[in-house]
View 1: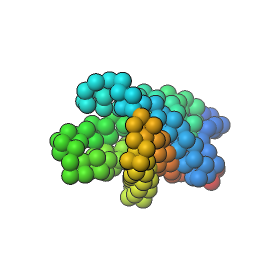
View 2 (view 1 turned 135 degrees about the vertical axis):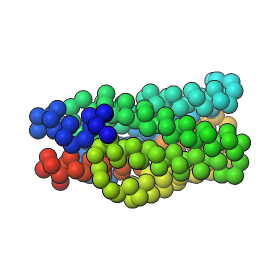
View 3 (view 1 turned 60 degrees about the vertical axis):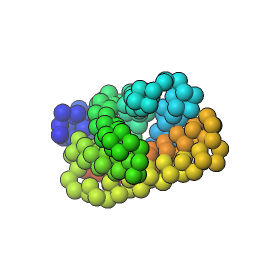
View 4 (view 1 turned 90 degrees about the horizontal axis):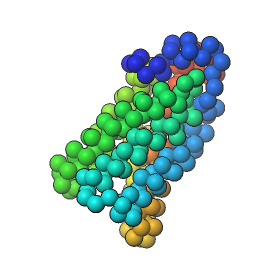
Length: 206
């Protein structure tokens, strides 16, 4: 999937051999991803926390719009190569839109019951992982990448739910957003580091 210009061939040709951005380790990528995504997530959850938009469908649409519009830019520091911010923002916007559509399909289709949020996340994250993997030109490792992303996302989301059950009100909702963002962002940081392994290998960065 070369349309985003993030495969090793595209990045090396565009960067002239001088790569910038990214992190030196998976742990560093996970930490940066967690903190960046948590900040965006708190902003997104504030719509729910302070009831800024009436109507469940409209609220979820607005929350998804914040994630789609801002997260790619926030996480672009984890991506190697010139022009990473614009290209990755477009890629992430596409991927998260697919994730959000899948999640909402399960949530509204199951009327918020029968673990609708879990099923929506499971299928949506699989689609997001596959898209990131293909866009960066990585062959294989889908299951390991997906397993880490799904596990960290679910841990963050579940912890957030527990915090909300304890604190309640607007503060509890914001805590849910922060915890969800930390888990989701850490998982994305892990995925982004590993999907760029072919690029780092060719550039002699491993």
